[in-house]
Amino acid sequence: MKIKIILLSSLATSLLLSGCWDATEPQKMYYVDGLGIDYKDGQYEIYLQLINFTDVAKTEYPNPQVAPAEVGQSKGKTLEEALFKLFRSIDQNIFWGHMTYIIFSEEAMKDKNTVPIIDSVLRYRETRYQIWTYCTQDPIKDILLVTPVLNKPLTTSKLSNPLNTEDKETFVKPINLRNLVIGLNEPNYEIGIPYVTINKNWGTENRQEQETAFIGIGVLSKDGFKGFIKNDDARGTQWMHDRTQRGETTFKLDENDYLTTTLEKIKVDIKPIVKKDQVTFDVEITLNARINGFKTNVSEEEIRKKLIKEVKKEIRTTYNEALAKDIDIYRLSEHLYRKNVKVWKKLEKDGKIPLTPSSISKLDININQLKSGRKTFTRTINH
Image (cartoon, rainbow, N blue to C red):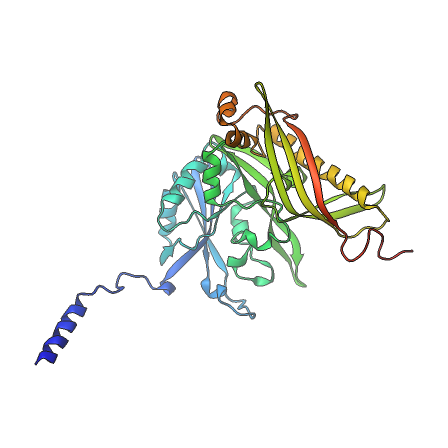
């Protein structure tokens, strides 16, 4: 009798358990990987990239019939209105927890349009602070439809995981939403966002392929968009922070010969020098360099001199290009704020201190190691 009572009690108790009745089955959800945002004619225009997870789990034999992603498009007076309009044409629940990146158009970054966008994204409980942020002048939909080389899953793309290729080259420092919010809330209240474009350097026997590439930055401030710095004008940014794992620079050896060197283990020290009400900055950079290929016999000392001259030139070029757009590209104002807040308070205006081309008064480049690979500083093959 006691056994029957225990069994009946257990059965009655189990009926009170809620279980997972309110959970949505994974195969009945759509997963957001990327979000593109534009601003036209007073309205937000959004592009939602839904990723196909059957493609993520594929083997080395991809299914050509499976679309890696689809991109939806909608407009609204606010970001939320545009999303709700898009929801009307979606037949499954949407999960935002796997979203990896956001792309802003140039117009979306102007006139403080970005601030409410960032606020909306971060307020939603499923999104994360680790979402990568980019900017572009290319059509956003075209970027969202680019698939990785060799038909790899979209979760391995450059936009979904920009850290994949950092050990090859760190031309532009990746920025996530956490970095973006910190950069806009602390002096100098500006942040550089990687600029992404589409290039057509790849191809198969039958067709030309497209891939995304980082070629510069777009600078955003708490008051709006400051402008783009791209291509060779942006080269100096990679030498002015410790996040750069690897980069290259090319310079002339003689009238007809060029040399490309790989720069690694970059360490940057920026010191503000205060004299009365004037502030300048001493910059000291330590790095390792590796020589790739060259045609002429050349001494180690000659390579060191020309390499140091080229790195200095790139840093100055980027700095002056940024000054022309009223951008504190190397966050010199923040360095003063961190090391001498009393002087910073005296000089700052909206978080920035006055800067001129001579504000970087000292720029020292120290090459800790100059490696020539397997050979000495002579040609591998002599004629």
